[in-house]
Image (cartoon, rainbow, N blue to C red):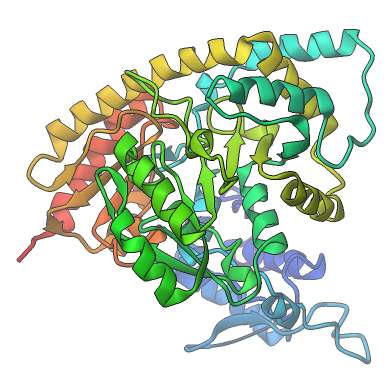
Length: 483
């Protein structure tokens, strides 16, 4: 709630709080069945004594709008219209709980809400800082757009033809041979994953992936009753000597990997490991989803060629995107796959949204086709490298003796492991109260409770300095030495 009490008003605070809650119920924002925040949470949010909140809730219970107990919390049981009506309103909470798509993990929901709190330092956010986004250049692109004729209608199912042609040329520079008919434009790589989960896999099937992995933090596969089977990861990438055993043991349908600047570990799959992976999967007939959205974010030298560049048997479904390197708000990515697969995914996408934004597709084509994207990527690499170096320096200053980490050669992330016993939920809560938002390792692997994903991409340098210094102090305050 954005509303705050007016402490200068003659109206008692508990009456003000009562009325704002009553108004949310009357407007249908809090429907019947909604569990409202706890007394403590409301008191902290409104910056009042808990007794003030208790008085407000007691009045609402007396009016028949709320009902509460110590175990189930306080819930909305009526609204003002319902009190006058002969029949009850629909129980929307039961509808919400009946949906097929899994909700986000509670930690992810908490992070998604907290990201937009004013003054928060986001130490785990996986996107470019607003000051690194090319706003001025984008304005010039759209000024050019307004001077030319364009369409505000739908694009063809696979996406804007000109954009797909530009992506073909861009991919050729990465060693990937394709054609416009082999490319589907999607609203970010995440939509590509969702289309694959719905269009290519049977419910109840399994996929292999690195553990930890970004894919554990979203439910695009799990919501379609597809199991995620984690394989161990080392400094060179996924351990390929485990693939055959895991594939046979779980009857896996495909393998998902982020070979370049892995999320969340920052790991870079070596050239030799890529060759091994392609050989093992070819021998096993195991298709691969290659998520390559961080490829352009290298610092000293480009990563090895994509898996898709060494794919004569069309084993690899390739995902690319502009979200990590250019603009998350543009919502433009692509899938490269055999034409039959692209046709299938395009058909499903048309049922979802009838195609990605035509305006965004036009802008993306201008960025790639004009060479501006390549210039921008070089600019971003320079800034990210400096932020990475600053973050490593800060870790050396503040975290030596309480954590270990590896040095990423690109991407957004440093995967740190605490060498002291840190209650992670307590650390998350204390950090948030101090204005610092964290991404705990358990989001990406339930067994990674002593890890954090630190991102140097979003927080500004001065925020990294303040945030990491304070975070180290909090760790030392609440931790115990590991046994």
